[in-house]
Length: 125
Image 1 (cartoon, rainbow, N blue to C red):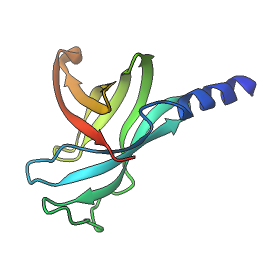
Image 2: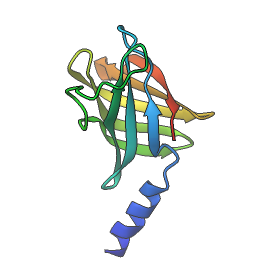
Image 3: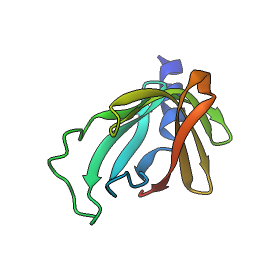
């Protein structure tokens, strides 16, 4: 039990924990994703959606859905081993992230991680 508590306290102190604003999609809308520990891993859940005019989209169908899961901290701001779900394509990809200078670069990858699509997220809190 002590080992489990130690893992939970390490994950809860992770520097990536918080709420992040995604880059705008093709329509100019964006999401707020809350990243937090989930067991010994790190997950991200869609907390809010906004349109291109920054208006809250309260009826957004994916509110509360996990967007990132099974992410593990590798140290020095690098994260890997997770999955990311892309709402715009409704596809799931292998994922990795890099936290640097208050920005989070989030990538979804195919072909064994050789081909990746990513975007920079900005910390909200």
